[in-house]
Image 1 (cartoon, rainbow, N blue to C red):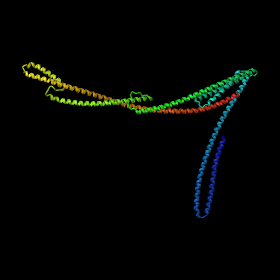
Image 2: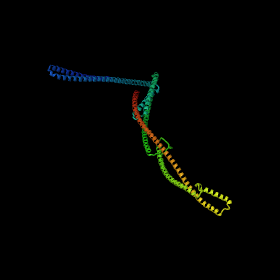
Image 3: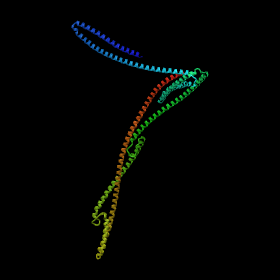
Length: 531
C-alpha cells in the first residue's frame, strides 16, 4: 500500500514536472524561432532602402516587449513549478508518514492476532491433555472441570445478547465492564484448574494405565450424561433469569426516562410560574399607592410579597380616606376658629366700649373704680358706711331728722344700682370666659390636628420610602429570579448535553463491549468445539 502511494505521488510529481518542462520547452522553441525570423527580416531590411528603418525599429520594439512578457511568464511558470515541486515533496512526506503509521498498525494487529492464535492453540492443547487425562484417570471428579468450563461459557454467549440494546445507560456499561472482569477472572481460574487437573492426571497416569475397567468407563459416561443434563438445565435457568433481568432492566430504563421527563416538565412549569409571579408582582407594585409598612415582615418569597403589597394598598386606601376625613374636620375647625375669632373681636370691642363707659359712670357712682371688683367695693363701702353710722349715732343725736332721712334714701338708692351693675358685669365676664375656653379648646384641637397631620405626613413619607425599598427589593428579587431561571435553563441545557455525551459514550462503550464479547464468544465457541 505504501509503495503504491509512493508510486502514485512520484508519478503525479513527474507528470506535473513533465508538463511544466514541456510547456517551457515549447515556449523557448517558439521564442527562438520568432527571434530568428525577426533577425532574418532585420538583415533583409538592412540591405534595403533607408526608408524601411522606422518599420524595423517598430518591429524591434514589439519584439522586445514580447520578449519581456515572455520572460515574465517564464519566471512565473518557474515559480509555479517550484511551488508544485514543494507541494509534491510535502505530499510525499505525508504519504510516507501515513504509510509508516499504517505499517505500525498492521504490525500491531498482526502481533495481537498471533497472541490470540497462540493462546487459542495453548487452550486447545490444554483441552486435549485434559481429555486424555480424564479418559486415563480413575478419579470421578476429573470430569467436573470440563463441565464447569462448558457451563460457564454459554452464559457468556447469552449475556452478549444483552448488549445489543441502544437504550443502555451508564450503569449498564459499568455492569458490563464488571461482567467482563468477572469472566476474565473466571477464565484465569479455569486455566489454573486445568493446570491442577493436568498435574493430577500426570500423577495418576502410571497407576491407572493397567487398572482401567469397562465398568468405570460406563460410570464415567453416565456421570458425563448427568452433568450434561444438569448443564442444560442450568443453561435454561440462566436463560430464564437473563430474560427476567432484561425485562426488569427495560422497565427500569422506562421508569428513569419517565422520571426525567416529569422532572423536566416540573422545571418548565416552575419556570413559567415564577415568570407569571414576577409579572403579577410588577403589575401590583405599579398599581399600588404609598402606605406605612414599618411593622410588615420582609419574607423572600414572592407570594408573601404579593400579600404584603395587597395589604399595603388596602392600608393606603384606608389612610387616604382617614386623611380626607381629617382634612374635612380641619376645614370645619378652621371655620369654627374664624367664627371664634370674630366672636372674640366682637366681645373685645364690647369690653372696650364697656371700659370706655365706666369712667363716664364714675361721675354718678364714685364707688365703681374697677369693673372687676365693683361688688366687693360696694359691699365694703356699705359696711364702712354702716360702721360710720353706728359710730356717728352716739355723736349725731342732735342732728336734724331731715338730714338723716336724706342720707338713708341716698344709701337705699345706691345699693340696688350697684347690685344690678355687678350682676351684668358677672354675666359678661362668664360669657367671655366661656368664649375664651372655647377658643382655647379650638386652638388646642387645632394644634392636635396639626400634630396629627404632621405625623400623617411623616408616616406617608416613611411609607413612600418603605414602598421604594420594597420596589427595589422586588426588582432585586426579580433579577435574582431571572438569574435563577437562566441558571436553571443553562442547567437543563448542560444536563441535555451531558445526557447526549453520556449516550454517545455509552454507544461507544457498548460497541467496545460488544466487540470484546464477540471475541470472548468466539473463544468460548472454539473451546466448546474443541471440548
